[in-house]
Image (cartoon, rainbow, N blue to C red; front, top):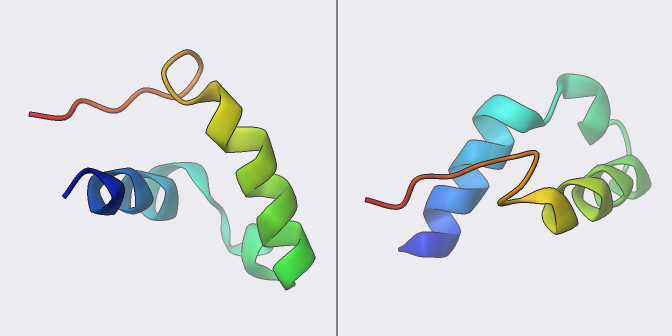
Length: 46
């Protein structure tokens, strides 16, 4: 499942423990990450 692969990558490589402090900090980080997937943050779906 592609979304599971993307979430795994976020959880294990791009997010830090501080990003989980509050719901808002997590949303802010995800709002930063998602538009950059494919350019600054890459995922290989194979």
